[in-house]
Every structure is written in structure tokens, then in C-alpha cells.
Image (cartoon, rainbow, N blue to C red; front, side):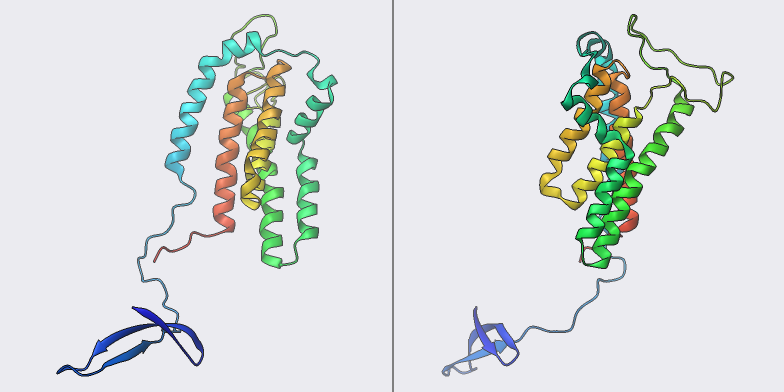
Length: 243
């Protein structure tokens, strides 16, 4: 098999064959078919998001975090973490206006309308829905923030302020917003995703350092953020057929 050229076809497959009865070889130039072929009906779709993997990884991470809660509560303590520049920087990743400003920057930078719309929607709705999910889960789980003096899980009764999440810590709102924004940015800048993940993880770490949350509060937040952004992204960018 070789390649040949033709009018309107810069490269096409060429094969050498012989005339029946043993004659001189002839060249046959096969031009590519310019007609697009749609995916056949029933073609499998790329599964996105992969909910099985999300459940498996999230479940394992949450169990591990609960097993490490006691150790983290005793050893990962920096009471003045938010008096330090790096502590304030990391906490700001869980501040919703941070992501609204980044969404505005994306919208101003992009010229193609579909790209601009998708990225802006991810950066706005990802952290926003993540924050709403955190507040709703606090009302449902009702686990209180850690006691700085005594380790243990405490829960508030549903009859005690059913619509108030004051003092509740599961999951961490700051961490969930930070990871939702990080997962959204990772879809726009995949090569730099670990930078965003590190900043979000740093936000969660400062919450543990400040004894504002258990380690498991932050891990649950990261897992929920992953699911929220994956679901949102799947709505913005439909699955592609595999042919």
C-alpha cells in the first residue's frame, strides 16, 4: 500500500495490482469518501460522568477520613492559621466571589461564544451549587463542628432548630466551594488541574488546622463537589457517540 495524490485529494490510498493473465502492473488510486458517515443508531456513548467510580472512590475516601479524624484533630492544629498570608489565601478559595471573579475573567477572555458560555457557566454554577449543597447537607446530617477540648461526634436533634445550620460542620462549605471551583477549572485547564486541586485541598486543610472542621467534613465536601461539577458538566457537554 502506498499513497498518491489527485485533484482535491492531497493524499489517497494507492495499491499495485496486476491485470488478470499476468500483465504489467497498474496503479489504482483510491480516493477517500468525502461523505460524512453519522454514528449508527444504538452506538455506545462515552459514559460521563462515571458514577460508579465516583461512588467507589468517594466511599473509600470518606471511610478513611473518618478513621483518621481522631489523629487529625489531635495533631493538625495551627490556631493562628488565618493570621498568616498563606492561610488567608487558601481560605479565599472557598469564598464564592473568588470564583465569580474568575468566571468574569474567563468570559472577558474568550471570543468563541460556546466556549465562553460553557466555561462561565461551570465557574459560576459549580461553586454556587456546591455551596447550596453544603448548606442543605448540613441540615440533613446535622453533625456539629469539633470541640477543641474533647474529640467526639455530636449531632443536633431535628426538633432543635430544624432550619438552622448554626454550628454544623458536615460538610465544610468552604471546602466544597473550593473543590467545586477547582473541578470546574480543571475542565477548562486540564494540564493545570493539580494546581487547582492543591489549592482546594489547602483550603480544606486550613479548616482542619483551625479546628473548624473534622477531616471527614472536608473529604465529604470534596467528594460532593466532584459529583456536582461532573453532573453539571455532563449537562453542558452531552456525551459523544463512539463509532
